[in-house]
Length: 488
Image (cartoon, rainbow, N blue to C red; front, side):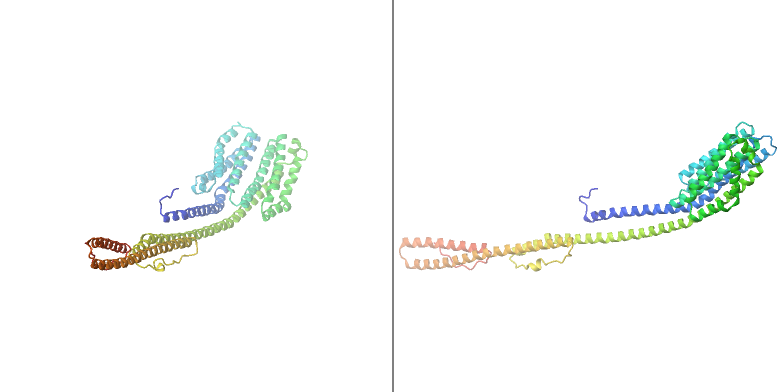
């Protein structure tokens, strides 16, 4: 950026404008970032209600449909298996439709992050394949393992989507939200375990792969609790820990699972429990997990709201303080800039007055022979002690030095002139005496030759007196009255 030829006012404005623009940009950036963080926290609770809860409802519906599908594939001859499956499929469709509605809701969709939008799209794409899967199930064109894995994939997508909804700026709340989803996901491990064992009981046979899968699911459920429970707040840890320690349902489930896995023999495992005893052990825990998850989610939302309000308050305070600081900076910069311009303008005005008015006037008056008072023509000006004042003092000193030099030069010229005038007047006196003497001699002499010489000498003396008068005039003095010259 070039400012050559620009006024000092523009240069000062440009100099002050750069930090002000930078400060404004930083203030605006900080305000936007903080405000966006607060809005994300406020939106998180709303998104969990409008998108997270429908996703959880879809998980429950898919879990029930998966269980009934495996029962149908295990024994297609059951008369009530298909009607029950159709009823559960309609519930699944209703739950998926709620997710589609959330995806179509511009307000909800606008509050999601890019990851959440992508995960929701993946859920809906997977849900589009349910009709094809269901036809294959009814036509016995798919194995139980394939159907089981398809439903598992759909549920996994739902939980991945739910985890992405808890991506909030607050690190602790983000970790707690993801840990809570993992805790809720432990219910899915039990649901898969339930579907595998019930389908095995229905088919009256169990493979070693099914038994190993149940063992892995039990280990996965335990691992999910052990990893994620410490991440939750102490109050939440106490709720889940008390349930596992004091409630009879988890203990009964552990006993049932112990019987099934006691020998890791499929034939023994299928005979360990009948469907009634298994459901009596598994269903209460499934229901309790569901209840605990919903209650923990509600408490998480209640923890988010105060944090969001606090962040919003801090954002407001920071924005106001930043605005005040910006205004103060503008005012201070304006005053400083105006002060600089005023001081520089004064210096320019004083310098121009000295160069254009005072010094030329002093020189004219000195040339006219006037007496000059230095204190009057170049008074001592009062400037501040800062750098600008020092420049002003230097200019004032320079002005006084110039006037004093001019006065001294004039005095020197006047002294020289007086010397010349004095010499000229002395010469005039001598010449006047010489003329008087010549006149007397001319009157006394009678010799013609001598008289001619005296006349020539008189003429030369008269010319010398006129030259002396010219010297007096050139020295600046008034010419005195002269006597009549005598010349032949």
